[in-house]
Image (cartoon, rainbow, N blue to C red; front, side):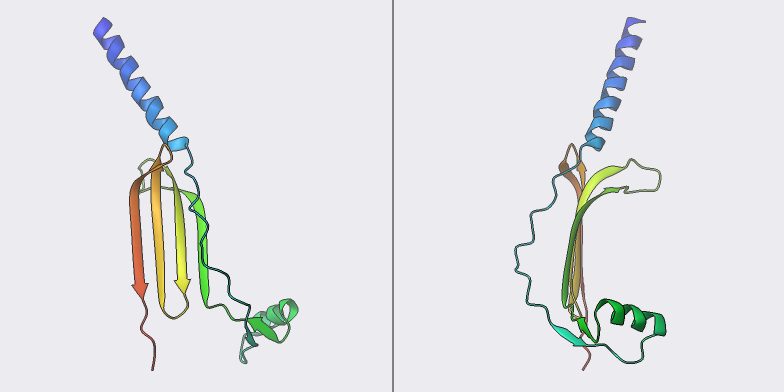
Length: 127
């Protein structure tokens, strides 16, 4: 009976350590080091649906910002399979409009990367 109690205690301890490891949030990725370029604008395109055109005119007027790149960095909870454990994680999306798109994810255990995933999608330029 004593061995059974020891086994149960060890299993409960392992479960608690595993649960604790899934609760610790990782540090965010370092700041993206490239400088933000000067804001460029273009005329509001013709032929937009009426609600969209009203929105842009209300927010920006006749000139709308020209966005060529975007970088989104953050933290999230992630699950590798539908019924699996939920990991703390971090991500970075990088998009160069009309050129490529990249994403990078890390699922962490005790704040350290355990599972990493990345993808790059290249876009063909028309013309």
